[in-house]
Image 1 (cartoon, rainbow, N blue to C red):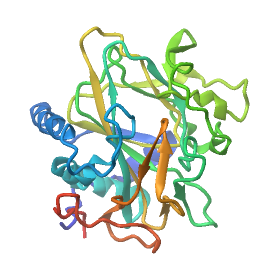
Image 2 (tube, rainbow, N blue to C red):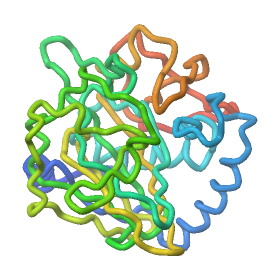
Image 3 (cartoon, rainbow, N blue to C red):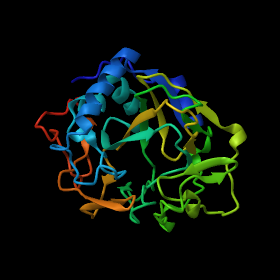
Image 4 (cartoon, rainbow, N blue to C red):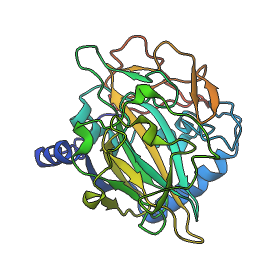
Amino acid sequence: MKATGRFKLTAQELQSFDKNGYIGPFVLYSPDEMRAIHKKVRAQLLNRQYAPYEAPIESAIANYDRHLDIQALSEHICRHEIVERLTGILGKDVLCWRSEFIPKPPGAEGTDWHQADTFEHASGQPQLVWPEKEGAGGTINVWTAFTEANEANGCLMFVPGTHKEMHFDESKGMTFDPEKNTNVVKGNVPRGFNGYDYSELQKDPHWKPDESKAVCMVMQPGEFIMFRSTLLHASKPNSTKDVPRLGYVARYVPGRVKVYPDTDVVSEFGGEISLKNYGTVVVAGRSTEQTNRIRTENMRGQPFSGLE
């Protein structure tokens, strides 16, 4: 699938992304198209015959990387609208290393402010390693709204420009304790991090984000937004009684980054998954890091259609 060039970021957009740490939303699907995809994917999520990981369905990691078995998601992560924009930021070699659904049902707490660089905050070891001379560089998150996301049902929030300074030390690690770390009130808002207290990673225990500068990402079904994982981000609680919010995030890095180095398992959220079925997906160019596991077909034997 060759690049069209239609969706390449302009110089002005790249400048805005560099300054703010995010860009979008962009339209990927119409609301009707998104609802149809959502219906199809929801049914397939329950069928774990081809799911890449064996984990209890209630586990937060059970539906990691369903782009490795659900064709609609396999196609989604390779869409021109996403990948051509990514190449302007990451270069010609781009890998999709992880994807996950992020649901927020009615009444759910908000997600605490956080940044992620090496993604070692939960497992205790870096899941991404950049070339030594470059240092860590985070990942580009592409967050797609499967449902409407607004301030009432728990939309994303960003503090623009905060991606260039890390306020958290991921190597400190966090303690998984869902009984203790659920609906913890911070700034008069119930916030958590799926059973973790992200403030355990703060370099300065007295530091607090300047929420007066936060912007809310209101999105329609089928829209996506791109942001650096090192950008301070959070989400509001879902204060509605009957309006769920569902996002799907795909995470991308340049082809020179080592993904899950020196490990065969991922340990997060009180569970563990084997990487025996895992592989990064090359969506543009190639993986120049030779140690990376690569998948060219999903679990159903269907090829990924990345850009040539």
